[in-house]
Image (tube, rainbow, N blue to C red):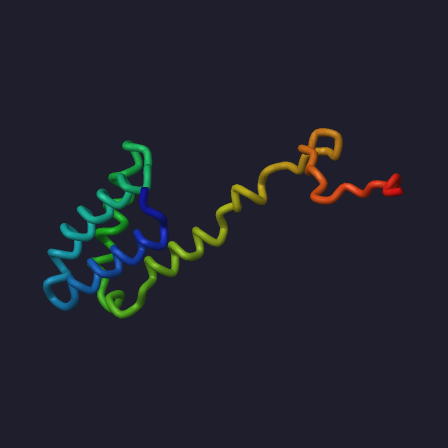
Length: 111
């Protein structure tokens, strides 16, 4: 699976490749294809992939977006807002935690 930051970088590279007048027609086609493939790689449901493809195609068609990595920034914001799966786990009560064996055992009857 591909993450949102990597998907944003790839989409920004496609946007940069469609810089200038070629972006008016190729941006929609190449950006749409890249958006669909990226949505597939990110595990987006099949019925939502077309919407992602249209948004990516529109983004690559817009003028003056080639020099602004907006897709990468959006991916970074999405990654920051995701909950950390490790931190989201509830803490176990003390009675259910696994016991940690002691590395040193003291002996009081050393005589």
